[in-house]
Amino acid sequence: MIKTNFKHALVLAIGVAGITLGSASVASANANDGGNQQYSDTQTAENSQTVQTMVKTSSTGNSAVVSEALSLAKMHIPYVWGGESRSGMDCSGFTDWVYAHAAGKSLGHYTVAQESHVTKQTVAQAQPGDLLFWGSQGASYHVGIYIGDGKYVAAPAPGQYVSVQSLSSGFMPSFSGHVI
Image 1 (cartoon, rainbow, N blue to C red):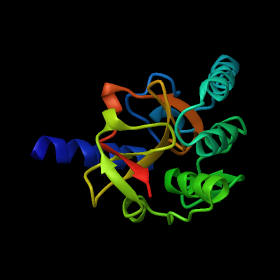
Image 2 (image 1 turned 90 degrees about the vertical axis):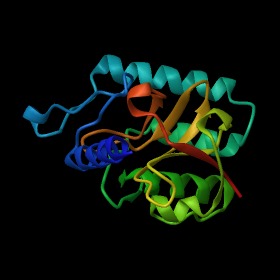
Image 3 (image 1 turned 90 degrees about the horizontal axis):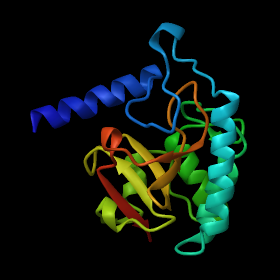
């Protein structure tokens, strides 16, 4: 248990510093560059291709939420701590924006507050449009929107953009939640 709590604290501390752990589909920030890693043209093209494919195949679950999340992923919106607009978003600002615009629901701008708007379930039970949370319930520190096929959209970390990412054992969500 101590190892898990230390890992979560370390991931949170590193995330705030602008470094991403584990996700193979997101460019990791380089500590020597001050955490300002930019996407290459190839990475941007791959992200756009993934978004186009997911829009075409997203017919199950909450399609309006998935469509809005994918739409924002195409806009190259930068991560901005506390942000909740197209000029910049953090993870909970992103999920609150998507649900406000796609479903007319305000989730609040804080991961723990957003937990109160979901029916908690395992990550394996997540359906497109459900929220994915990292950290224990009541102490979550990151959130994204599951879009299906092992992928989600999130505002990952400083120096990066709202993007489609793949679930990874190196940075696996702790639980998911269906918005009620």
